[in-house]
Image 1 (cartoon, rainbow, N blue to C red):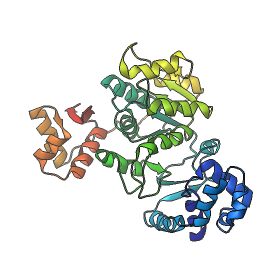
Image 2 (tube, one colour; image 1 turned 120 degrees about the vertical axis):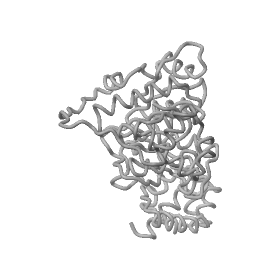
Image 3 (cartoon, rainbow, N blue to C red; image 1 turned 90 degrees about the vertical axis):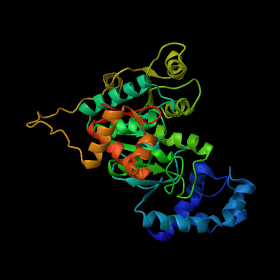
Length: 368
């Protein structure tokens, strides 16, 4: 992709008041992205759905400077740019009218993989919800080692799904509500870094965009559109998880929900989805397998037992400290160790993957 072509594609996604649907109309009308930026105001204002305000923004072209900077940023950081007319643009997203005209991806997985599932839920996940999420993903990983798990890197069910996928050896994609120069929440930085090595990070926001409220609703369409089905593990009667489920349904994708006890706050959303036939009831990975008619991959028998991973010096010290002192929060471990918070987060994440520790709500760590 030439620098000029890349700049124009990024710029198309930056024009105020255009949006993904009108951007497609513009390309269709003029025949190419490049042609849009050479058209006059008079020509643009005649296009149905564009109008005077949008035509004025397009002819202003001040956003081209920002597109130049973004093109430099993605090239410098080895970030791939996907445009909706590209051959390798995810075919599932292509089926969605409001999918991003352009988005950015950093990672090492195939966005057109045969099996992709989105897992969403409340930020206030209960221990039951976390365990169900972990068990479903671990069960699916046994039969479908090529499965990709998608979520939003948020607190609660999102981060549980990402960690469970990484722990099970699956690829996982975090869809961001901000640009690549930010990690939100910051405490999930080590997981985000792990995803770029075992999956990826995806966003349709430029690198300098901060995590504003409306961005989270916008990114949900990618979570829903990128996958074959969306699983809601826990949700209140309102919230982003239900919005994502609604979007998945509008894209004619399967929606699954884990039921909970009637009257419980973080089960009300899932129960409502099931009650009004907006989601199929699931409790295990095999339920998903049944509804999607998936055929498990036959595994060859292992000829050698997996060697239990050994701890390095710092991991042993952390492990012994928690054994002696009892459960500890990440803040307590940070103060005790004197290590940088980024280093402590990375060590704790690795110890989770190795099965030595388990993270509970409030970032409390206990011995497994």
